[in-house]
Length: 193
Image (cartoon, rainbow, N blue to C red; front, side, top):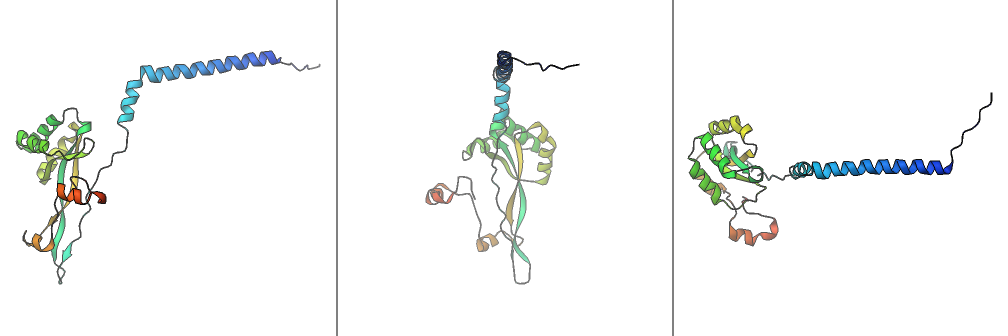
């Protein structure tokens, strides 16, 4: 028995290669059409909501002790309920709802919220500051209803011997416009402490 080698002509090989390239290019074009035309809005929305968000946090200040080791000034946790406005469909209604959940007057809370024009749309904006643990628990129990609401822990100074010690040890406050202009090269922003 003899086996003959079967040879394929170069013309046939070229034809097969053209068909393969045409099929692969057609598959690629159909896939691109599918992604762009049929699901373009879906993927655009996914990409807009999938980005890095920088959230600034305050560093805790150190405690101060007297010569016998008693605490004169320390930090305590303070909780701020904030809203990411870009994630909320109706920010004003979310603020009203959060106020109702904690038992505060929704219109007063909204008025205070709207007065603060310092934060940008993609940064958290405070709804309520220094809330009690009871109010915090009420909001945390309902937070699944408000995905744009954040609870932030902010270190706050506590003076065990009364607020008069703040004059002795110093205090901080939010930067004002004059200070912001004076220290513009230092990286301060409105809302910084």
